[in-house]
Length: 275
Image (cartoon, rainbow, N blue to C red; front, side):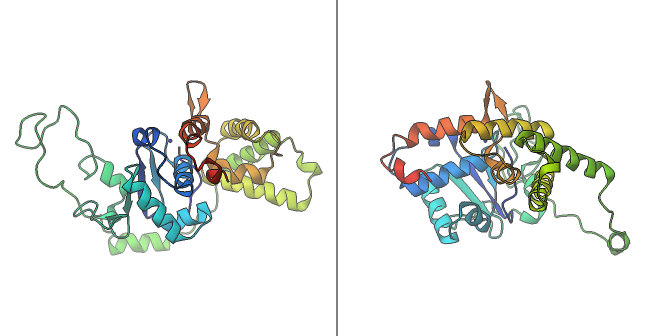
């Protein structure tokens, strides 16, 4: 399900179980189901993972942390998600997630070769064991590399590098793409509107947006909200939900909307779920 704008501190990750979601019943309250839909919009398309924190989700969903935790607990109890908290290395129900796992080494180290979350290749067997046989014992975890005093001093003495011309050029390309997508002319814009345009270009540049993505997500915005006016601020605000991954001629968000509404509309709490 594609990465989008940052949602505050990254202190854990949630894994969505697609098969379970597609076959879920209507026993969950409407508010919890709507939280699930919003998680689907934030999740990576391929892995179904949302890297986030309770605080970040509370900000994104415009609710308090207690509500977020309760909804995640109910979703996990229903078998729809798994949640691991970085700070405590625990699942949402308080159980230890990965014994001995050092979160300081980062999630990438965890899922990389030899990491506790890595999946061995089918042809690879454990050391000293038969090919394809069961792996016994905990995974080897290397401690994070330390920075020596000389290296640290070099880093501290290194002057801060100003933004490169290339970076400025990319941001300008994004700014032009936004103006074309929104059908606006900077020459006719007020100072406040120009400021909003610059802010939107900066935000999209920070999430590595491209001019092509700006065009694609602008089209999706108009298809999703045909009566709304597309502005730079609106495009930046909804960037996360307008992912442009193409699969079978449909965008990722098209598939999310279809997949979620199929079972949501059958839920007796459908009206409560609609924001």
